[in-house]
Length: 260
Image (cartoon, rainbow, N blue to C red; front, side):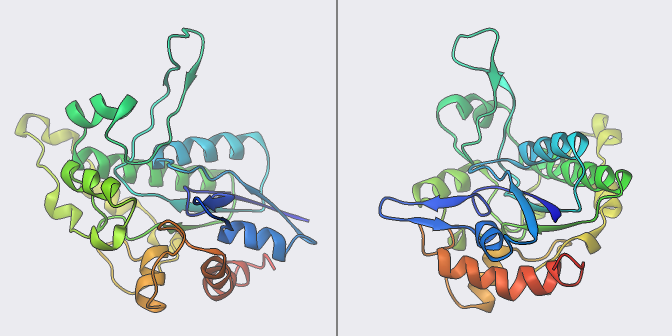
Protein backbone atom coordinates (compact mmCIF):
# COMPACT_ATOMS: atom_id res chain seq x y z
CA UNK A 1 0.00 0.00 0.00
CA UNK A 2 1.49 3.33 -1.08
CA UNK A 3 1.90 6.06 1.53
CA UNK A 4 0.82 9.57 0.52
CA UNK A 5 1.30 12.70 2.62
CA UNK A 6 -0.90 15.75 1.97
CA UNK A 7 -0.37 19.08 3.75
CA UNK A 8 -2.25 22.32 3.09
CA UNK A 9 -4.73 24.76 4.62
CA UNK A 10 -8.53 24.54 5.02
CA UNK A 11 -8.96 23.93 1.28
CA UNK A 12 -7.43 20.49 1.86
CA UNK A 13 -8.40 19.93 5.50
CA UNK A 14 -10.37 16.88 6.61
CA UNK A 15 -13.68 18.71 6.45
CA UNK A 16 -14.90 22.22 5.73
CA UNK A 17 -17.63 23.13 8.15
CA UNK A 18 -20.29 25.79 8.21
CA UNK A 19 -23.27 26.19 10.49
CA UNK A 20 -25.48 23.71 8.68
CA UNK A 21 -23.33 20.97 7.24
CA UNK A 22 -19.97 19.24 7.10
CA UNK A 23 -18.34 18.80 3.69
CA UNK A 24 -15.44 16.56 2.68
CA UNK A 25 -12.36 18.10 1.10
CA UNK A 26 -10.81 16.68 -2.07
CA UNK A 27 -8.27 14.85 0.10
CA UNK A 28 -10.97 13.07 2.07
CA UNK A 29 -12.75 12.19 -1.16
CA UNK A 30 -9.45 10.71 -2.37
CA UNK A 31 -9.09 8.71 0.83
CA UNK A 32 -12.58 7.27 0.41
CA UNK A 33 -12.11 6.49 -3.28
CA UNK A 34 -8.75 4.72 -2.94
CA UNK A 35 -8.99 3.32 0.59
CA UNK A 36 -8.13 -0.20 -0.56
CA UNK A 37 -4.66 0.56 -1.89
CA UNK A 38 -3.56 4.04 -0.72
CA UNK A 39 -2.64 5.12 2.79
CA UNK A 40 -3.18 8.88 2.86
CA UNK A 41 -2.19 11.04 5.81
CA UNK A 42 -3.86 14.43 5.62
CA UNK A 43 -2.19 16.95 7.94
CA UNK A 44 -3.76 20.07 6.41
CA UNK A 45 -4.75 22.69 8.98
CA UNK A 46 -7.48 25.36 8.71
CA UNK A 47 -5.91 28.80 8.67
CA UNK A 48 -2.39 27.43 8.22
CA UNK A 49 0.30 29.70 6.89
CA UNK A 50 2.90 28.50 4.41
CA UNK A 51 5.44 28.59 7.22
CA UNK A 52 3.37 26.11 9.23
CA UNK A 53 2.80 23.95 6.15
CA UNK A 54 6.57 23.88 5.63
CA UNK A 55 7.27 22.85 9.22
CA UNK A 56 4.65 20.08 9.22
CA UNK A 57 6.10 18.62 6.02
CA UNK A 58 9.65 18.89 7.37
CA UNK A 59 8.79 16.91 10.50
CA UNK A 60 6.83 14.18 8.74
CA UNK A 61 9.34 13.74 5.90
CA UNK A 62 12.26 13.41 8.32
CA UNK A 63 10.19 11.21 10.64
CA UNK A 64 9.06 8.54 8.18
CA UNK A 65 9.25 7.49 4.54
CA UNK A 66 6.61 8.50 1.97
CA UNK A 67 5.94 7.31 -1.55
CA UNK A 68 4.56 10.69 -2.59
CA UNK A 69 3.89 14.12 -1.10
CA UNK A 70 1.25 16.60 -2.26
CA UNK A 71 1.70 20.16 -1.00
CA UNK A 72 -1.15 22.67 -1.17
CA UNK A 73 0.32 26.11 -0.51
CA UNK A 74 -1.93 28.73 1.10
CA UNK A 75 -2.13 32.51 0.72
CA UNK A 76 1.18 34.33 1.23
CA UNK A 77 -0.01 36.82 3.86
CA UNK A 78 -0.66 34.37 6.69
CA UNK A 79 1.71 34.33 9.65
CA UNK A 80 2.36 31.60 12.21
CA UNK A 81 5.11 31.73 14.78
CA UNK A 82 5.44 29.50 17.86
CA UNK A 83 4.43 31.81 20.70
CA UNK A 84 3.86 31.35 24.40
CA UNK A 85 0.46 29.82 25.09
CA UNK A 86 -1.48 32.13 27.43
CA UNK A 87 0.84 32.68 30.44
CA UNK A 88 2.29 29.20 30.57
CA UNK A 89 6.07 29.48 30.21
CA UNK A 90 6.54 25.81 29.33
CA UNK A 91 4.21 25.59 26.30
CA UNK A 92 4.37 27.31 22.96
CA UNK A 93 1.96 26.84 20.09
CA UNK A 94 1.15 28.00 16.59
CA UNK A 95 -1.96 30.04 15.91
CA UNK A 96 -3.21 28.96 12.47
CA UNK A 97 -6.18 31.31 12.23
CA UNK A 98 -5.56 32.59 8.73
CA UNK A 99 -5.14 36.24 7.82
CA UNK A 100 -6.63 37.47 11.07
CA UNK A 101 -5.47 40.96 12.04
CA UNK A 102 -7.09 40.86 15.48
CA UNK A 103 -6.30 39.09 18.75
CA UNK A 104 -2.88 37.54 19.15
CA UNK A 105 -1.82 38.50 15.61
CA UNK A 106 -2.78 42.17 15.90
CA UNK A 107 0.69 43.38 16.90
CA UNK A 108 2.34 41.47 14.08
CA UNK A 109 0.13 42.87 11.33
CA UNK A 110 0.23 46.35 12.86
CA UNK A 111 3.98 46.63 13.36
CA UNK A 112 5.86 43.98 11.39
CA UNK A 113 3.91 42.83 8.35
CA UNK A 114 4.91 43.85 4.82
CA UNK A 115 4.03 42.54 1.37
CA UNK A 116 7.76 42.17 0.70
CA UNK A 117 8.11 40.00 3.81
CA UNK A 118 5.16 37.86 2.74
CA UNK A 119 6.67 37.35 -0.72
CA UNK A 120 10.17 36.44 0.43
CA UNK A 121 8.91 34.12 3.21
CA UNK A 122 6.70 32.31 0.71
CA UNK A 123 9.49 31.81 -1.80
CA UNK A 124 11.89 30.60 0.90
CA UNK A 125 9.30 28.13 2.21
CA UNK A 126 8.69 26.71 -1.26
CA UNK A 127 12.38 26.42 -2.10
CA UNK A 128 13.19 24.79 1.25
CA UNK A 129 10.54 22.10 0.80
CA UNK A 130 11.57 21.43 -2.78
CA UNK A 131 15.18 21.00 -1.72
CA UNK A 132 14.21 18.83 1.26
CA UNK A 133 12.03 16.49 -0.80
CA UNK A 134 14.67 16.30 -3.52
CA UNK A 135 17.35 15.45 -0.95
CA UNK A 136 15.17 12.67 0.49
CA UNK A 137 14.37 11.36 -3.02
CA UNK A 138 10.64 11.70 -2.40
CA UNK A 139 8.51 12.48 -5.48
CA UNK A 140 6.04 15.30 -5.01
CA UNK A 141 3.62 17.74 -6.60
CA UNK A 142 2.57 21.21 -5.49
CA UNK A 143 -0.74 22.99 -5.94
CA UNK A 144 -2.03 26.26 -4.50
CA UNK A 145 -5.19 27.73 -3.03
CA UNK A 146 -5.02 30.28 -5.86
CA UNK A 147 -2.44 32.20 -7.84
CA UNK A 148 -0.02 33.10 -5.04
CA UNK A 149 0.76 36.52 -6.42
CA UNK A 150 -2.70 37.74 -7.33
CA UNK A 151 -4.49 37.13 -4.00
CA UNK A 152 -4.85 40.06 -1.58
CA UNK A 153 -1.85 40.89 0.58
CA UNK A 154 -2.05 44.48 1.82
CA UNK A 155 -3.36 45.03 5.35
CA UNK A 156 -6.43 46.93 4.17
CA UNK A 157 -7.36 44.21 1.71
CA UNK A 158 -6.73 41.45 4.26
CA UNK A 159 -9.10 43.16 6.68
CA UNK A 160 -11.67 43.53 3.91
CA UNK A 161 -11.25 39.84 3.11
CA UNK A 162 -12.03 38.92 6.71
CA UNK A 163 -15.20 41.06 6.65
CA UNK A 164 -16.30 39.16 3.54
CA UNK A 165 -15.49 35.80 5.17
CA UNK A 166 -12.85 34.70 2.70
CA UNK A 167 -14.36 35.81 -0.60
CA UNK A 168 -11.14 35.76 -2.61
CA UNK A 169 -13.04 36.26 -5.85
CA UNK A 170 -13.33 39.99 -5.11
CA UNK A 171 -9.80 40.26 -3.73
CA UNK A 172 -7.50 40.16 -6.75
CA UNK A 173 -4.40 42.32 -7.14
CA UNK A 174 -0.91 42.20 -8.62
CA UNK A 175 1.13 41.45 -5.51
CA UNK A 176 4.51 42.10 -7.11
CA UNK A 177 3.43 45.64 -8.00
CA UNK A 178 2.38 46.20 -4.35
CA UNK A 179 5.66 44.93 -2.94
CA UNK A 180 7.73 47.50 -1.06
CA UNK A 181 11.30 48.20 -2.13
CA UNK A 182 14.23 47.28 0.08
CA UNK A 183 16.30 50.16 1.42
CA UNK A 184 19.59 50.69 -0.37
CA UNK A 185 21.72 49.76 2.64
CA UNK A 186 19.98 46.36 2.76
CA UNK A 187 19.86 45.74 -0.98
CA UNK A 188 22.40 42.94 -0.67
CA UNK A 189 19.86 41.02 1.44
CA UNK A 190 17.22 41.12 -1.29
CA UNK A 191 17.23 37.53 -2.55
CA UNK A 192 13.72 37.69 -4.08
CA UNK A 193 14.82 37.77 -7.75
CA UNK A 194 17.16 34.83 -7.20
CA UNK A 195 14.52 32.80 -5.34
CA UNK A 196 12.14 33.26 -8.27
CA UNK A 197 14.81 31.83 -10.56
CA UNK A 198 15.71 28.92 -8.26
CA UNK A 199 12.21 27.50 -7.67
CA UNK A 200 11.28 24.52 -9.85
CA UNK A 201 7.92 25.53 -11.36
CA UNK A 202 7.63 22.16 -13.10
CA UNK A 203 6.78 20.69 -9.70
CA UNK A 204 3.62 22.81 -9.61
CA UNK A 205 0.34 21.73 -11.17
CA UNK A 206 -1.26 25.02 -12.13
CA UNK A 207 -4.90 25.09 -13.15
CA UNK A 208 -4.57 27.70 -15.91
CA UNK A 209 -2.00 28.97 -18.40
CA UNK A 210 -1.42 32.39 -16.84
CA UNK A 211 2.02 32.85 -15.23
CA UNK A 212 3.41 35.67 -13.09
CA UNK A 213 5.49 33.37 -12.70
CA UNK A 214 3.01 31.27 -10.69
CA UNK A 215 -0.24 30.12 -12.26
CA UNK A 216 -3.73 29.42 -10.99
CA UNK A 217 -4.80 27.22 -8.12
CA UNK A 218 -7.99 25.71 -6.81
CA UNK A 219 -9.91 28.98 -6.89
CA UNK A 220 -9.03 29.75 -10.51
CA UNK A 221 -9.99 26.21 -11.47
CA UNK A 222 -13.41 26.68 -9.93
CA UNK A 223 -14.01 30.28 -11.03
CA UNK A 224 -12.65 30.13 -14.55
CA UNK A 225 -12.87 26.53 -15.72
CA UNK A 226 -16.10 25.53 -14.00
CA UNK A 227 -17.71 29.00 -13.94
CA UNK A 228 -18.61 28.32 -10.31
CA UNK A 229 -17.81 29.66 -6.84
CA UNK A 230 -16.99 28.00 -3.48
CA UNK A 231 -20.40 27.12 -2.05
CA UNK A 232 -19.52 25.98 1.45
CA UNK A 233 -18.65 29.15 3.35
CA UNK A 234 -16.21 30.11 0.57
CA UNK A 235 -14.75 26.60 0.47
CA UNK A 236 -15.51 23.74 -1.89
CA UNK A 237 -18.59 21.69 -1.09
CA UNK A 238 -18.48 17.90 -1.47
CA UNK A 239 -19.61 17.93 -5.10
CA UNK A 240 -16.94 20.49 -6.02
CA UNK A 241 -14.29 18.54 -4.09
CA UNK A 242 -15.16 15.32 -5.89
CA UNK A 243 -15.07 17.13 -9.22
CA UNK A 244 -11.64 18.64 -8.45
CA UNK A 245 -10.36 15.20 -7.49
CA UNK A 246 -11.72 13.47 -10.59
CA UNK A 247 -10.93 16.17 -13.15
CA UNK A 248 -7.64 17.55 -11.83
CA UNK A 249 -5.91 15.57 -9.08
CA UNK A 250 -6.38 12.11 -10.61
CA UNK A 251 -5.44 12.91 -14.25
CA UNK A 252 -2.74 15.48 -13.38
CA UNK A 253 -1.06 13.90 -10.34
CA UNK A 254 -2.17 10.40 -9.41
CA UNK A 255 -2.17 8.69 -12.80
CA UNK A 256 0.90 10.33 -14.42
CA UNK A 257 3.02 9.54 -11.34
CA UNK A 258 1.88 5.93 -11.07
CA UNK A 259 0.15 6.44 -7.73
CA UNK A 260 -2.98 4.69 -9.02
